[in-house]
Image (tube, rainbow, N blue to C red; front, side, top):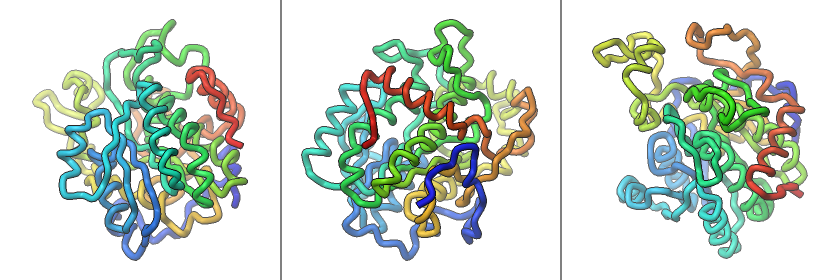
Length: 337
């Protein structure tokens, strides 16, 4: 298995047979996950819920960690998935979830780090960490570390980090990741956390290769109908050109929005595609491996395309530095051996 994607060495698209309009059902068709166990964070809303449905349809046992258990139970009504309590901003909660899973003795075949927040005002977790970094990256880093033995036991697990094209909004700011000494900008915080998702996948792929653990990160696309923007202000949306003054989504934005089933397709493709059996560590989009893209304008809002991978998100030094910082901020050692 080729797992070293430093500098984007493996970022070469395949003839996947799928594309931007493919749905999760298109991907899962003909795939059996019978006897497999999956965990999908955020698996009760938006593309996470669609991912859960696909795995259940294919015969997997699916566990959905949920901060809001009542909402999760309601959204998953009629779907054969288990809801267990967990809050990605609460390290004790993550540890309790992982301990409960490890006690079952089950191998973990699929771990989809899908949950995320965006557009939020400055908030901090109990440790003082900025909420998007805490939720989108640090919580998932801790979850993988705590579940590592179960992933190894699967003899061929896959870990999927749901990142975003939003990683192009910001590299990782190692000097001040929690906005203690710089002005807080919500999209810069989001971009940093999504860059972290890719850097984590890049390094985890290298460390997991000897155990047959494959790791992928991805951009699901701009997806309509999710609750990711539930805290965004109309003022910000207008400023970014996403909405007009009357609250209508700009036609050019609307034209490229994916449906939720289309948005979940790359999640599912990374998790189950046999085309990825001998590769790990790559960043994907539109059910394929993305191309490197170093041509980003200074002003992100002037960006005209929404594809590609920034080289800083697959840089070896950045990936290893983030790993060490993530251990430090989480107060744990994750040697991945």
